[in-house]
Structures are given as structure tokens and as C-alpha cells.
Amino acid sequence: MLHHTSALPEYVDIYEKLWPDEKDWYNKALKKPDDWYPTMPNRKRKEITNKEVLEWLATKKRLPAPDSEYNYSNSGYVVLAELVERVAKEPFAKYVMETVVFGFDEEMKSTYVFDEVYGFSPDDPETVNHAKCYNRVSGRFVPVGYTPLNFIVGDGNVHSTIRDLATWEKFLHSLDYNLPARELLWSPVLIKNRKQVNYGAGWRLLREKYEDQVKVRGKLVTRKHEYRAEYHRGEWLGWRSFIARGSRWVVPESGGSIDAKRAESLGIIVLSNADFGDKQFTTCRIAQEISKVYLGKWKKDNIMNKFNCG
Image (cartoon, rainbow, N blue to C red; front, side, top):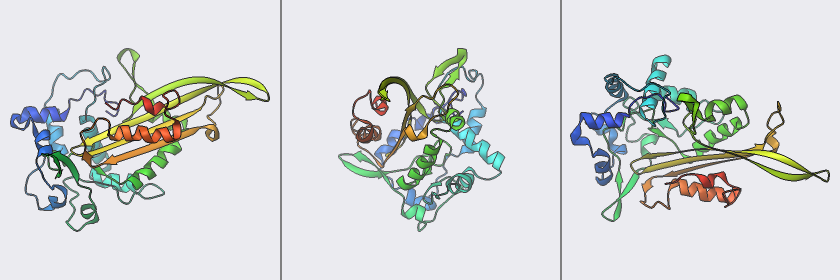
């Protein structure tokens, strides 16, 4: 499910088939000013939950065989969230808060999952400090926020700050040269007939190898280098996020381990709460511009320049 090879259909498509009148629900939400989040405790509407998504998925028959093809599907994340709930015997939001958010040496105090169970009152910090999202409507930016799918978790609904995400990136950095962890998270998935898809456990992947020559004790020595990047974007209404990670190191001799002192690693996180409608000004493009300061502007030097920001 993390690799998107589960063959589970996209639950959004099922929702639109069950309620044809809601087919354009997302675009309608982007055009209708609605200060959703701070007033959520006072709402009387019934939003769709993970339990209902599971019921929809259970009605589907004759699915393709798992691992036969790669097809991005948010449904896998929803099913995984429900699986966590059943094993942990507590709500997914609570489990994430207890074991992940507060499990770091530096607590991610401003990160939380919002669902139909975790309601916040109007004066709670999660409500007061919440960043509204905006969209351009009739030439001006207005807050937008309500959709019937706002309570679904697993594929989204994690709220955080740039400081907390920097703590998370610091943890990921500690895994860069840990071979078992790196291979678990950031190995391309293999599907039918061992075809490789450049997607890991929730990460899009880029891989490159190159050689250069350096002088060692007056002699030219050829060194092999490996360059990797993991990245992903997030999008919901006016909110945008992008995380990009790049690392490179000298390939060790057979049986050797990576020399972390001679390796480089860069992590970039970009958050936005408005859709500017400009393909040249996106969270992905901003991440690329930041990477040029450290890794260089040329594609041969900077693997992040090869991200598809379209």
C-alpha cells in the first residue's frame, strides 16, 4: 500500500460515482469562500470518515492482482491508518501523537492529526494558530477550506510547522547512511516481471552514479559516486507542501560501508497556504531554487534540478 501497488481503487473516484451531483466538489470548494477550520467545532454537517471509505472499498470486486502495476492511490494510506487503529486499539490520530510526534528527542509540539474524534475548541492553540488557506477568486485571495472529505486521515490531515518538520528531517538525515533503513524506505519498488518503478515507501525517487578523478599522493585515482534524491509534494485546496532530500557519497569498496564524513546531505521543506496559479512559482520550484545555493545550478551537479515540477 505504501508503494501504491495494492490495486486499491482511488476512494475519491468512488465518492464521485456514488454522488454524481458532487462530481465537481473540489473546484466548487476552491471557489467558495469558507473559513472552515476555526469554526469546525460548531459545524452541524456530517463529514465522510475513514470507516465509510472502507465500506466503499469493500464493495469493489475483481480488482487487479496486487504488485502487477503501480497506480498512485490515496486509498492505501486510508486502509493503513485503519490497520494502525485496529492493532494499536486506539484512534489513529492519538497513536500518531503518542508514538511519532512525541517520540523524537526533540518533541514536535505543534504537529497533530485532525479527524472526527480529535475536535478542537475555538480557543485551543490548534485552532487559534491554524494557518488558513487561500485561493484567488474574482481577482482577490479568499479563505477556502470546506470539503465533505476533510476528516479522512492517513493520506493527509497532518498539520505541522516548518520547525517541527525540520526536526523530522533531522531524523531522516540520521538514516541517510544507515543501509537497512535506507533500503527499506528509499528502494525502488518492483512489480510484475521485476519491472522497477522509481517510487519507494511514500517517496518519489531519483538515482544517479558518476565518476571523477582526484589526486591522492600525486596520483590520479578514479572514484565512483552515488547520488540520490527523495521527494514528494502534498496538495489540498490552497495548502501546498514539498519535501526534497538529496544525498551523495563515495561508493565504498566491496563489503565496505559509506563514509558519512565524506558524504553530503541536504533536506528542503517548503510550505505554502495559497495557490498562486503560477507554474513557475510552486513549492517544487522554490525547493529547486534553494537547492541551487548549496548544490549548484547545473543539472550535472544538482540532482534536484531534475525534479518534474510540472
